[in-house]
Length: 262
Image (cartoon, rainbow, N blue to C red; front, side):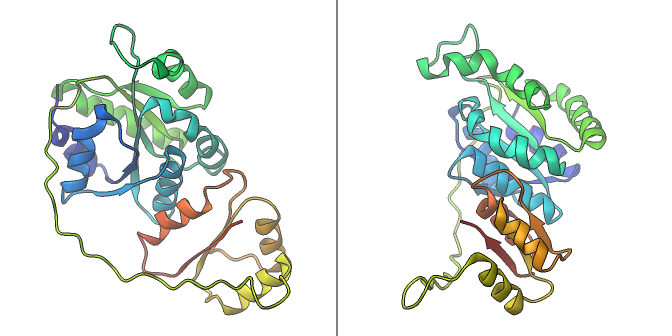
């Protein structure tokens, strides 16, 4: 067994300091420490796929990322891992638990995924190792992660078994709430604009340094046709992940970020 800092500290020294994910009881002490540590930032996600998208956005803004989830949620990760991370070559360290591991009593919903966890990662071209159970295993495993990612520019998986990380309390911290943004409904009071015209208007008002993430399909294609800029990302594939990616970028830059979705 290890303590969370046994992994988080050397991982942070290698640059991994942005964590996002969805809870699992196996991950509780690890997530608790990622939240409370002053070495890391943690963003909770509504789904595993959203966590992958948030991490992709943070990587675009220069962060090295860790995504944490239960293996039963790997199905939600398939979309962005295969159609966002793979074609764009966006790496992340994916820590997934092994619920339903053979010989470990667990809930029936984990039965099938437990049998295909490693093969599913392999099918998605994601190399994986067992998450380190002892402190003296950590350095070699992190070195292997770094070596493989430097070659492939793809995610790398670590599969965490039950009881790997010792208990870690979640210490309440004062939360500074930022003021909310404004909401405008522009769908009433006139004819609905067409997409091309709307994109022209967006480009007319957006500053040149505004990062624009355009969702898959004709939105991104037409934006490219109107004006291609270095600050544009045309999100081919990964349907439904544009907002998560935009959040990951916006949390890590002072520059304006705009997401075109829907």
